Image (cartoon, rainbow, N blue to C red; front, side, top):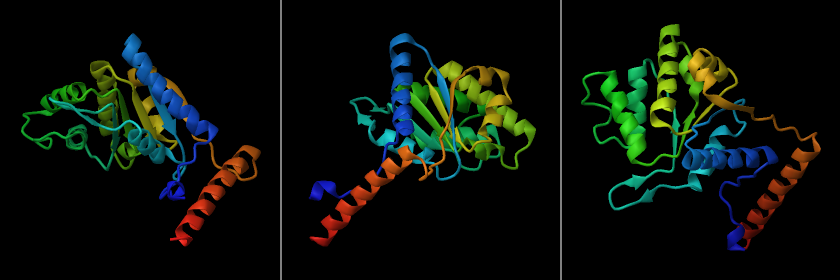
Length: 220
């Protein structure tokens, strides 16, 4: 019965399973054909975007190698950033920069350091989460600068990027024509409705898991 104890059940709906398969496909196409296709995945708060990213990361963990830590998937949750420079420093800290995003003369040097880190750690899929925060109370100049930075990352790192955020994140992507042209896939996580047959089946599966977990706990 111990095997049935799950702290945080992750239920894969047909849509979530499709997204996991798409993540795998993006990596496969890039590794085998050199195609860095990107994805914009949006959804309302609580729709499961971040949980999907965490689940995928958990199933594709870092691997310690003799000369580096291999990071097949890098999930970065964007916090409030005021400038492209601040974004670069925060993501460098996230990927493990020993200088914590400091020690550079300008933004260009930080950008080059980020590109180097992404390549040397072997990142195959970069997931940028909560991208909508870039637009919150930011000037058009800041939004444009970060959108341009994203466009350059796709070109220079040559790995697929998954942009995740609230529905209005699409305005960030669409604000830059070159970035917009590099987004091959766009999906919206559908709202969960118990009134629909497919969602009721998923709910029953979750209810069954919770029942087994409760039974397991009560026998200890």
